[in-house]
Image (tube, rainbow, N blue to C red; front, side, top):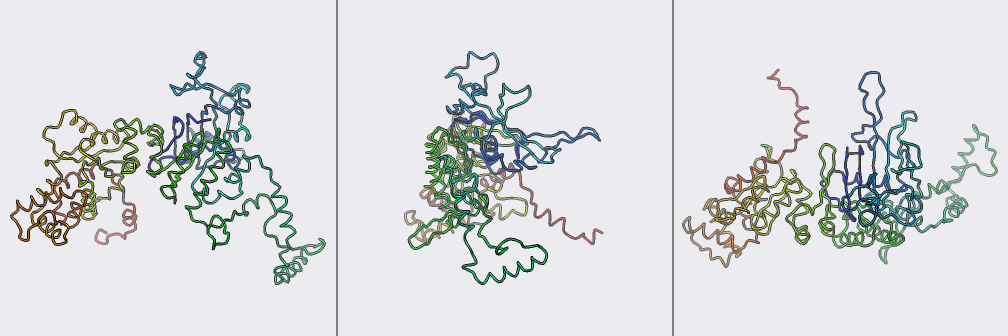
Length: 605
């Protein structure tokens, strides 16, 4: 069983969205776009326990908390606003087919849509497959003054016109949907609270334990006063005082201490799973273990659940990388991809992202409450192999941002961020904010020929794109056109190499100071920096040769760190200033508040 379509209307931060899925799916986006909301939406429709809370939803589950639409005319009652989430499931299990057969429809595989009336000839595999459409509707009930939500079969032929049949909880359990929130993963995974992983395992195995009855009997028989005689006089005194106002007719003592409320629900909340992690350590509550250990324990429980129902488990998991080392991140991703029917994962980690195929990686974006998605594989120009090769080397960070600054060489990749930081430090008072705060990331393209390719990739994903690269005298017209089309700022500087640019545009005195320091430290033994200073042309030649001979040493970046701000090459400064100008600045809230709180100017009064 797999989810192929999710439609959301007026739910939390999403005004509307229609997302299509093809098996395992990685959801990638910057913060506050809607990744968690999508997982919550799936849980509302497919989760067996989500709607059994009271209330199942609240004001802030509606888009902008608008659960009432203002009346168009004064004196009229406001209209109710509904949140609606619809899921289309294909390949239902045999058990679901038996119990939900009257609600089945057909899904056109190639066109990714439902068949409509008059298309019965298409209702055969492999053109179409059977599907089940479910929807959760939530709204405010003014008569009861509470919020309600229920899940229905979208196709309910046995119901009256305009009515839908509710999906019972036992049917939802057949879907095998598990939503692993980051918070619940650590605090509730091994508790016995309803909906915890341990509780899910017990229910999946069909275990009806006598634990509660036996534990309550034992706890009821436990007399705490036997081990704490000093408490007895206090309890008896309380009884005497109560008897002045209340008739104490019970046999024996009227007061007693117990370690719990002696109810199932309270025991579920108080019972704790203990474990010992080393030979010299006593058993401790699992929540006291490190966060990484907790997440590894969760992985062990996931394997247990998936093996219980290998054909029906659908996971939604938020950021499996939290407090987990890279090798464990890879193991979790591999497990989800190979042992579950379908997995929905949100992540910012390159070690997780690289495990998913580009065709299964959705980059989300939101504008005016409308969330859209684009497969990374649709960003033409990168092969699957190239995507996986570069995802750890900046590709992931760029994808999660708002802008990509593509440079062709390693020297530029080291030096330009230093120049940008110098601008921020020196001109911060004029409104220059850090590029990473503005959502821009530097990306090393590993050569001049790759610059157009990565520009196309980032441009297709909807990012602002900036390029800074060397002069090529006879650049092919096709490449020129590609660079112009795929970069918002397309800068071909006037030199055949970045080292030539530095040697030509920085003061010769600064270059000589730098070369002398390299010579004295022994770092430039193979360059032959003389003891006596050559003329300016000689200094520039030495500097160019030194920088070219040690591209990976970061010398250009060090030079930009040590020089005066006014000595940074003009070509670099002009490019970076154009980048800053193209990025929307974030309002400085703190200064605005301080301005409001400042006392009035007496002279102005």
